[in-house]
Image (tube, rainbow, N blue to C red; front, side, top):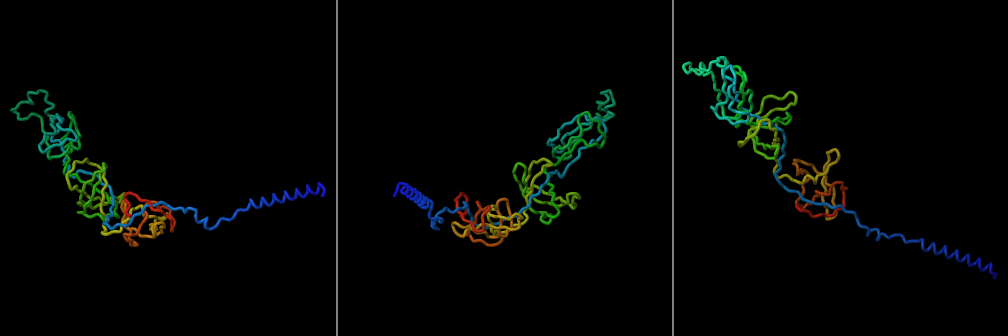
Length: 321
């Protein structure tokens, strides 16, 4: 062979070897099913609880305003000028305590003080007004030097032990409110006291369509008038209710279908449709179906889980597991 033929053969062999090498290095074996199964499976961390059987109360919350039921109007007993005021608004007064002194207009018109102080006339020109009741001065209309006429109101004494609360109840709820029922009064400072619904007023407000009920306190309390409070009244009570934490309950967007996520084993949870009953701020009654104490229900981490979901259980303080 001449050199040209040899060179051509070597070139062809080199190209062939390059093609074979590219084919061999470019081929990879397809992954087997066993390798796919080794990939980690996504699981949602959850915390679980179980149902508890207890008594539950369903209550309604309404607003009430404090009011002194008994008030005594202090009135002038003559026409003249107020010579002295012995009390201030907010003072506690007792029966017979001096409140005002009035100088009659006739006495004020006499310039000679000797005539006024002449004991033979048995008239000083000064009239004393005393408290007719024990209570608190809640209104003071006049001060020293004011001109008043006979019968003018000078102030108001409110009897402290006559404090009541006026509860305004929407008429559609009036069937739940009965005289003699107990209630809990929650003050703005988060303290509470017990009260009793005493009576109802036989009228309904024309605008708000609410009926007023009178609440009396079970114990004495020094409270101001016009204080707005919250009143909790038990609407219904159920003994031996099946109860779950409220976070265990899930619902659709229309709040018409409800369900919980129940564990069927240590790693799988399924959707269980339920019917709810009485609710509180933290708990809810499940009326159907009936769960056993051994059933495990997700109460944390359940939002967005599919009908059959892979989970793993997290332990937490307070879990009922």
